[in-house]
Image 1 (cartoon, rainbow, N blue to C red):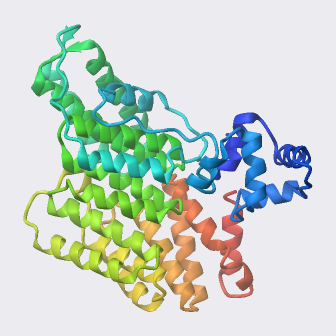
Image 2 (cartoon, one colour; image 1 turned 90 degrees about the vertical axis):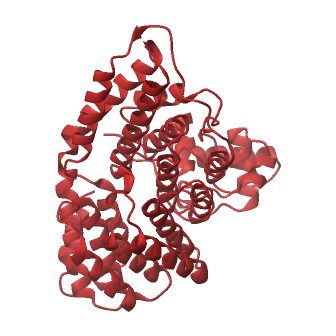
Image 3 (cartoon, one colour; image 1 turned 60 degrees about the horizontal axis):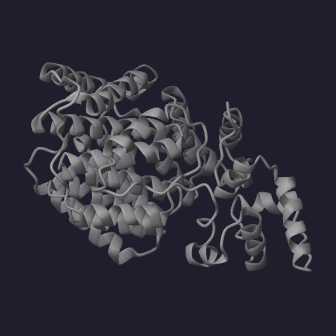
Amino acid sequence: MDEPIRHPLAYARWLHGWSQAELARRVKEAARRRDRRAGTSRQRVSLWEKSVMPDEFSQLLLSDIFDVPYDQVTALGWPHWLPGHETPAPLGAGLTVTVLRKAAQMAVDRRTFLTYTPAALGTLALEWATIDPALAASSTSGRPVDPALVDWLESSARNLTSLPTAHRQHTGPLLDGHLTTVVELLEQGSYGHTVGMRLHSLAASLSQTLAWHRFDHEHHAAANRYWHAAVHAAHQARDRDMGAGALSDIAYQSMWLGHPRAAADSLEHALSRTTNPTARSLLLLRKARAHAMLHEPRACYRDLAQAEKLLDSTTDTAPRWCTWMSHADLAVDTGRCLIDLGQPARAHDQISQGLRLLPPARDKTKAVFLGYEAESLLAQGHVAQAAQMARQSLGLAQQIGASRCVQQIRDLSASFDPLSSEHGVDRLLHEVASTT
């Protein structure tokens, strides 16, 4: 299996076939061409690919090496100016089927590099908020699409997506096949407006589900493409709630990868075209999390209050993509916000309440929530309990094959390293080490 790529600089190296040592050598050569010296080493490149931002001169040398104009370096900032990013296709340009086909063809993506920059996400969200969709395409060429076949595809897709997370190794390939069939019908079939709307809506739903499959396995580039396709297809189907949901999923991914500002901005655009109360509650809850990560408590608490009010008062049926949204999610994500805002005791109370409310079938969500609870306990100094919760989260994540949730505990385990003498910590660190 390919080694996961977790930073744009590592991805840029991979595009050129360079090791860290080779890139360090090229940086030194670029400095000599400018009659300067650079003490860049393989270790320094490794730090750049983790958490250290190169200084201005080093970025200038890297821009020379990757042939990127320096005005892009200053305009986009580190690391978003690096090569390898894709640009989302614009909405309203008649490219929906092309975008769907591109996503469907990306069946395997073992690398975790995020293809769209925060700026690109902002552009897509702005287009969603401002561009009115055209009528769903109809087609008069090819063989007529049988509405009964569309009935079966819709019913089958609903059944597959309702199965527990543990069955994804079986349902994923079937959903891939369904999406390929829908794209072929859109490309090659003959259909009127009504069937065209149904096909686009089904393509959006399938793409959104498959994006989560890829995201949970840390295939972030593929997840981006599926969510991008879902936005396009929902826009074509005039399903504003579903399109806003796909945008909010990309925003959630952005937060997971450390880009809360882009997430908050895109969620604001998504909310402008979302009408269902449950959908709005979910988007506001995610926006609250982005504000918490940005240490903006007033905006965070405002969004949490609005999310709770909408969830408490709604009697409308939720769109299928967010029927799972519940008071369990509200409680735990409120707790997650409180962790970010430095209130671990209040966070623990909220997360414990949410875990009690969570339905047993939502194993993947439980794995994430247990990780949050471990973090809140650790912040309060309850090390043994935190280690126990982290082990439960890790075991559940491994059981359902959600590598994203495994990585969550790997990241948290660094905080346990100085506490190895505490009860249960050695066992946790050993189990985490066995996952690498």
